[in-house]
Length: 102
Ligand SMILES: [Zn+2]
Image (tube, rainbow, N blue to C red; front, side, top):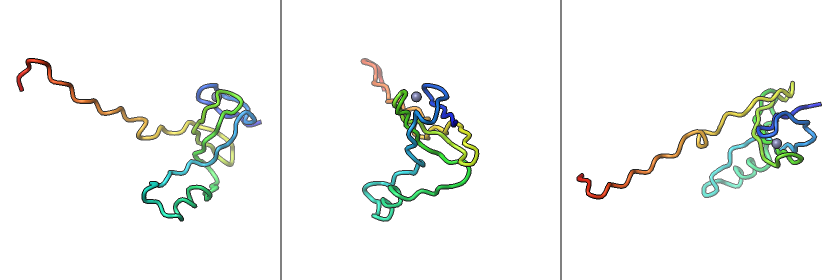
């Protein structure tokens, strides 16, 4: 039995999940060539060892979870957060107070 660690539900049986596949960076739609789209949609490395994958907890919280799995031992570890998600949003400049001098 393979246990998948859902970030919201905890470790659950792999039968509750659907493996959505290896995480592949999406090409820029405005500049991608047909070959880049084909590679994004269909080609996977199918590596041996640690692979970043997306799993869908279809019989639980119904959320997508990004995990790193060892394809030899089926060990899991949490994926690193994406750089965009980890960085806080830039603060908006404060509006000048009424009556304040520059
Ligand atoms: Zn879940």
